Image 1 (tube, rainbow, N blue to C red):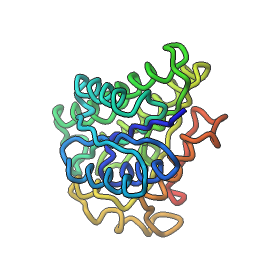
Image 2 (image 1 turned 90 degrees about the vertical axis):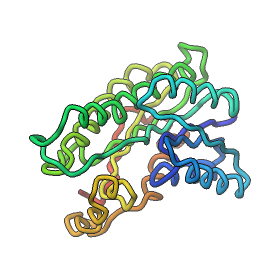
Image 3 (image 1 turned 180 degrees about the vertical axis):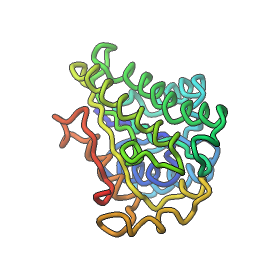
Image 4 (image 1 turned 45 degrees about the horizontal axis):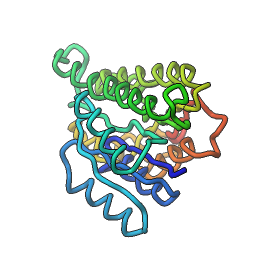
Length: 248
């Protein structure tokens, strides 16, 4: 059976690294993106150049209709889904809670939490033996922030990732006897563009000395953890949280 993987937010950073590594491990990969078609196309080109199979699929995970359409595109193009990486997510500008607007909070939860729920719903409908599927694996990308809280910077982001942790725990138990494994990776300080989108492009480098290993991590290091959790090597692992944070 061909392994078919959808990586949300797959055009850059951890998502792109995961898509590339999974393709090398034999997955046919759907690279989701919201607006940066050029970046997604570049990931697809890199995969195809190595002999892999990949497509780019546009969808805002915060929009249910777009998510449903994305999954249908994957069905029609690559076949029945066997793996999902819920990686798409956003941060906002550094702020205290007493400065946060409802619009900011609603955007954060809609994309980071509801988007992950809806993508997982569509994946379970395809993977679960309850729905005629042959099993599969979901990896949710959480964050060390869910444990640390990100005070004075991104408490809303940290709270959204706390929700992802609870979601991972509950969904894993819900579908454990239906052939679907659900786990989470919690990255620490990773050198990707997400810090710049929050107005702090040097954040990772500045905080590196606070990490027990005294360095930031790479997107590729997170990708290896994700792809392991997707693989048959993790066949008895569900509801697990893998902290890839340098000890932080």
